[in-house]
Amino acid sequence: MPLGYGFCQGSTKTFQLVRCIKEWLFHIIKCGLVPVATVCDQSATNVAAINALIDESNKIYITTNIHTDGFFIRGKKIIPVFDYVHLIKGIRNNLLIRDLWTNTNIKPNEKKKYASWDDIIMAYEIDKFSFLKLRQMPKLTDKHIYIKMIPKMRVKYATQVLSCTVSNFIDVILNFSEGVVKTQHGNITFSETAETTSTILSFFNDLFDSFNGNKGQGLSSILTANSGHISFWKEACNKLKNMQYVEKGTRQIIKKNSPKCLKNWFRNIKAVQEIWNILQDAYYRMLILKHSI
Image (tube, rainbow, N blue to C red; front, side, top):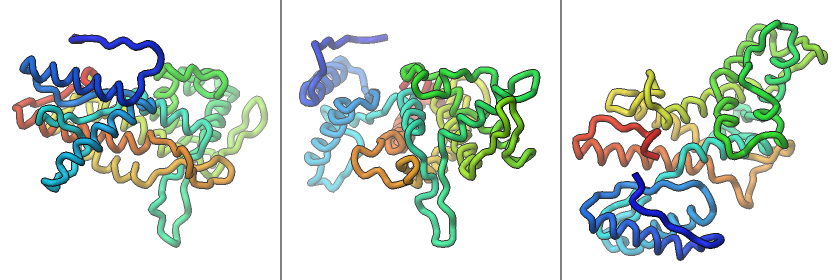
């Protein structure tokens, strides 16, 4: 239940947002409540405001040799979290126009691995134009696949592509027909990136589920001490650290205005783990992230 609203005319400047966040949290604490986290999307102003609050706290606490990824208001630590729905759309939006290098920690004798939206287009067109009576991915439409048609704000057009359904479809084609399928438009052949693309789709499906759980089993369940979320997130952080978007075609590293969604997924995992530790210390035994962030 909202305790208050803020209204603005035009874009809110970073310093104004910082002031508002401080003021709102001050009054919440004054009322006797204990705020633990803030939630926002990845807009430039929001990210800048959060970073400014963190930097300010680190400068204050530098004398105590304490570095924090959160910020402090009246002695209370506040943990910033990004809306995971916006993060998954960010992954999709960047994959539309870039390739994803998935093993930046590559060893000298290993081959670089990339995921590509081109493989998703091929999978969709194989399914759409195959000679089978029924489609294998019936939820997918042109609005999911072709960049000019995608409703960028609706999350289902991201999650229904970054899914185990699409991942498994690609995997079946690679394993049972060696990546070549006859269709109404001729043969369609997957590229060498298809296997990595399949793996990445499954990974982000699981990562989204781990934040979106409400009912169900595994990562789709509520976060508890025995739910498996913590062990999955540890593995997920290691994978995210070794991912990087690159220019499509040239595969050059993006040096200017590089996408932040991978880094922010990493930050989110660390933030939620810290929130969970705080709640456990306060004798909470479960957390429904879907209704919390």
